[in-house]
Image (cartoon, rainbow, N blue to C red; front, side):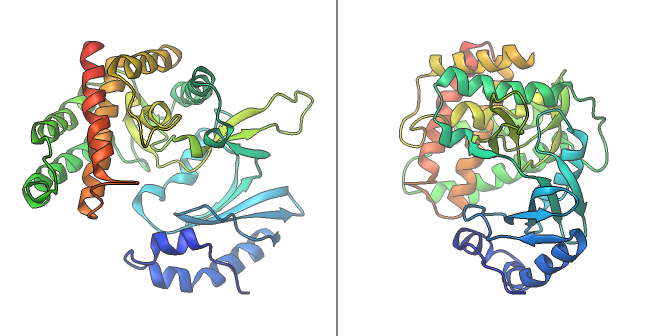
Length: 323
């Protein structure tokens, strides 16, 4: 069997450790999935950057999707998260093979992403908040197999501290180092002080929310989450990408009062402290900026400059909310 490797996926993983070998072995991984689940597999979806994903048909399950992830820590427990969230707002997991990091998923139709749907802001926030509310009410205990946010955040704090000396002093523009130091402090204080904890999706951006009509009598399109990067801990960790990534967010940062309002709207539905949601949004914006700077992406699309700007604005929003 010879499979097509989408350009987006190839470019995303080819320079990663083991990336070239994984791409070379995709034919065998897809063949094993085909045999394991009795599939007729179509051409892969072109947009994925962390997994080979394609529509398929199964005698046992009808229309399905087969997903084979590039091995990395963030996706290692995706199947466990989807199983834990069954009927709580996530795509349905049919089966998985941990060795190959292969998933068999229910096909989502029409499959339009929340980003592509271009809903009005209030409806956009409501869709995401309802999904996060479903995740929040799922009683999932701490411990294996999920990583704990306290330990993850402590490691991220150390990386951020190292980045101040290793990268930021040589930035092509002035970086607010106090912003980064504040991020380090929040990474060490927010996780252990949380009162509302559970399993976070980890990457609930609008591209990871798909419209689903379920082919039932109720033709109202519902929404489900895909592609979790699960982490257990403070539930205020999760709303950041949903709230931030609406409209022309890469080129325009809303005023602090508007971001504070969005945090309050989403927090009310989920039952969270909006100041914590805003503080985590500031932290995660700074972390995104630091990741970009490590790659030398200082400006432009995916550049650190926009994330640093959003982090500053989110910190102001958090202050307005009492954070």
